[in-house]
Image (cartoon, rainbow, N blue to C red; front, side):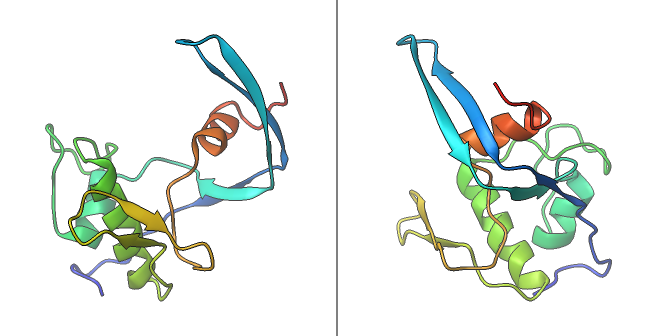
Length: 129
């Protein structure tokens, strides 16, 4: 279901499989997470892309090519589902009736947010540590 006219182009890149070291600075705990290869957006979702899918401009400073900001986690989940539908994929999240959260639908082919470990691995350029 598209809200506006222009298709959006989200460039994806593959992050290689490997291990990422995570830590919790509050507790001093460190652990490794083994990841399979995964796809992630090469760039953050822009305000124009978000608006093309949702019809909303929620950012505090409006600039079409800047990353969207000022959205909650549940708003980001809704965007993933709406974007998935717009390109013919299935919802990736089941949003709770009270809208307090959402559950991942593992067998879905839709877009989803990266896990903390995936985000760290992509942000570090796939570097092993």
